[in-house]
Image 1 (cartoon, rainbow, N blue to C red):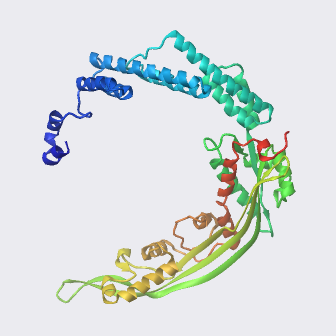
Image 2: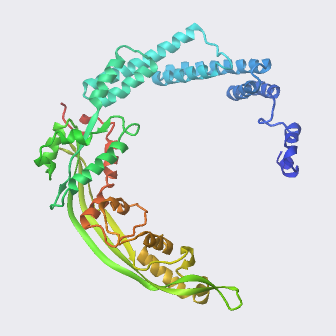
Image 3: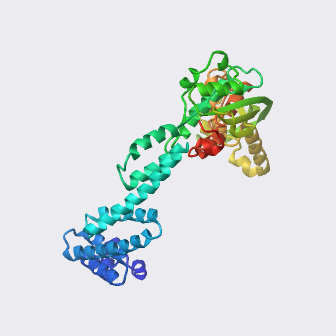
Length: 462
């Protein structure tokens, strides 16, 4: 086949390949049915089934394929029942799982053939599923009585998987789920020194991020309370700078079992200015004395000013039980953000594509200098920032652009938007930018504890 496909030329001859060499993708229903019979005789009923059903997909009324499918299905059913009986003596749950898998197979096979089972086998299946349901039901009710509603709910889902409508499993499942729900409050963070609304702004951002990240299907039982639910449980004085103790009380009043709380410590700031003062190249076209177009590169002196501010914040966060005030998880971190704002007084003329940091002729004449100019540019303007971007921003700016808080997202770690400003964001705003998306470790804690009942994290029974 490989030889033929390599030597035959032209797409028009592809059908000839199938005519000369029969392969599964090109075989007709009769050939597929024949191969199914051979596989069954050879002791591979699943492959026989696959070939027979493929033949029926091509020709649903092919009698030989129908007979091959029925024979394969019968053999599969016989083997499956044998394995289930063997498992039943050792592990009822595994045997019941195989019963469910066998049922699913029969349902899917029905469009091709009816897998024969007698009433005695149907009774065996029912008995095995009820036995598995009983095991899970007893486990679930014991878990519910032992203040483990999360384990109970999982067990009751298994009960209903084996036997829908088993005893009062549905009612107990609803009861267990309500008890299993773990509500999480995110309250305003404490701040070491007064910094406006920083503590509230950070907690609001964390609440929004966590409510999306810690939700189904990622989390079965954990729900982050809305900001309004928390705010209604707080007094005016508690809205500003709540201590850890106050935060625990607020979360409890809001109906939360767990609390995300943080403490924002010192904010370190480093600000500096850097400049790119050099000449760039501009391509200019004009006509010579004979009327021929002449292209030359001229030097254009420019000054680009870069202002950089790096802010590092001390942050301590905790996941707290509102029942006892115990810390379930804690983290200490120092998120950092660096803001870079560029500005130039040079207003470019003409086509921006006519500008280059270094012209090709100059690069060819002095490659070492060209390399140094580019390195200096990237050091000042930042990796990934082009001369064209700076010139486009300058041309579109009719007046000196000042910082506005709406542009703060451009400075959040991970942001890639080019920022063209004369001034930098203040340190407190950059502290917020460093902190708004720093909730990842708390998300991991909440997801890790999502399926853990309160008694299993060392908390007292209610």
